[in-house]
Length: 377
Image 1: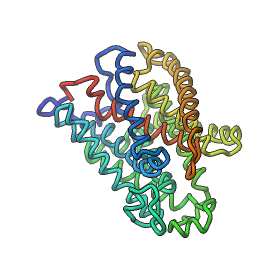
Image 2: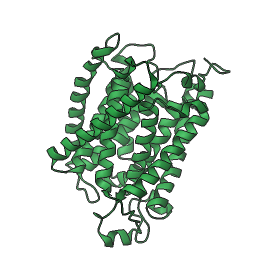
Image 3: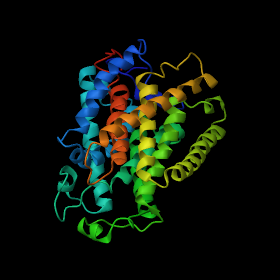
């Protein structure tokens, strides 16, 4: 269904349950995926080194790109690229990206207001100076929670019941609900007890005093994201797509994600000795690998016609790509003298906020432009 000018009607998405991932363009794999790497790889290095020094870049862009993720999900999966869908392909992605950037800054300001106080110097400077609260790392938990929640609404809950509001209002409500729940959860659940009191005072950080350390809270969110992406991006919702009763299907989808997260997080905690940075790095590279394989390469070489058990063949490919990503990013990170984070901490954010973000922007926001130019959007 198209709008005037041949653009796709985002409202059409609400009439069908599911995550509404971008349709596969006409073309062959792995050619499309390899061509897409010419966008994704430079995008990764541009973000990773935007301020010259890798750690300084992380301190500024880490929070901003984290808070960009909920906005990207809104534009790509709810608004179906609106407002860029009204424009020609070369302007479409640019317009959407500017909108996402503005939304990321505003959401980061919100995160700063919740965790300390609004101070723009703390957002845009890697070392804002005494009395200026930084956004890294304390606001990351808020941004990650907002992204996880909007993914849950979109992928796991099939947009129910918010999609009934229509494509635009539904997207706005989903974004606002995600931010509100993220703020409430942070204030009720998180504590900063592991942060020295002197540091909290110097950076004017508020300690919500909840039962969960902020580092463990963030790690749980990343493991939850792994299950969301594996089940509903890599496996396209199988086997839940076989369930015809909506209530049963939604209950099963949510139960699978919650149980999978609880069990796998407990196993990872035991296997890593409670090393949350390592847990984050593993989870981040798995999510990035799943998006690379499932979105950029459309599941190639494991993808086969049909659905069902054959869909599982994509999982070994994701595992191999995740292992390769972890080894490559870790080798690079170990050559850097970190002062505000660790090598594994950087691997997690680089995989998610630079690599995975680049894949989603290229495929779901830019619709593979300029690799593929579509005439109907």
